[in-house]
Image (cartoon, rainbow, N blue to C red; front, top):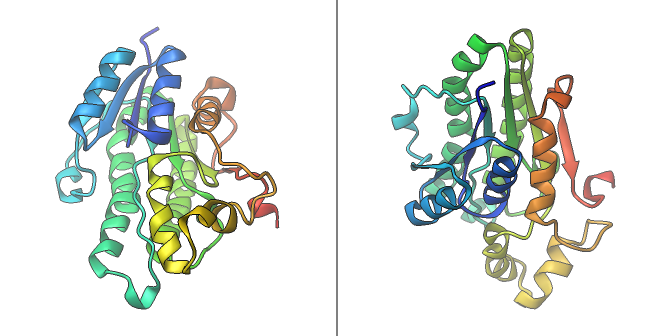
Amino acid sequence: MTRRTVLVTGGASGIGEAVARRSAQDGYRVIVADRDAGPAERLAAEIGGEAWVVDLSDTAALEELQLECDVLVNNAGIQRVAPIHEYVVEDFRLIHRLMLESPFLLVRAALPHMYAQGWGRIVNVSSAHGLRASEFKSAYVSAKHGLEGLSKVAALEGAPHGVTSNCVNPGYVRTPLVESQIADQARTHGIPESEVVSGIMLTRSAVKRMIEPAEVAALVAFLVSDDAGMVTGASYVMDGGWTAQ
């Protein structure tokens, strides 16, 4: 059997890196897609994969793209924290291009190959914020809610062709993206940085710790496996009980 290919966006760090490493460990050929050439190329060399250096916020460049991957993991994302009336308009547009328009274009580019072979897996790294809202995150929350809808439509359309599409919905994961929010959260809420993790990030979680990237990667590994053939159109929450409330 030809070895299956996994394409991971935002694959050079955080959740993406953990998914890339787990996928290589599980025997997949891995394409690490990231805008940062050095980290992407180093990781790809380490795991025996391939780097694709790409700025996924440049969505015009993706419109004619064709992908021959068997598994697509849409993970790339950024965050900006500010009240709606102070939110920078271009930041809002950037987040939507990167985190909603880009996944649409990548799914669009990957489906013909998946359909032709009668098998494919799409995993969209959403968030607890794809199911719930928080103040000061209008762009991120609305983009993740949109990604949830896109994933469900892809699940319905892909079902006759052996293609599944699901979301994973972690709470706060110990990644550079989350750590970079601490100063913004402190400023926006008017509290010391030392209080942000316990007082803001984990206040809704019943389990009072951050999620490790490898834990998210383990869930992704299940969803891309043959064992998950009947799992589609779902949103798998991994948030320590946040959304149970």
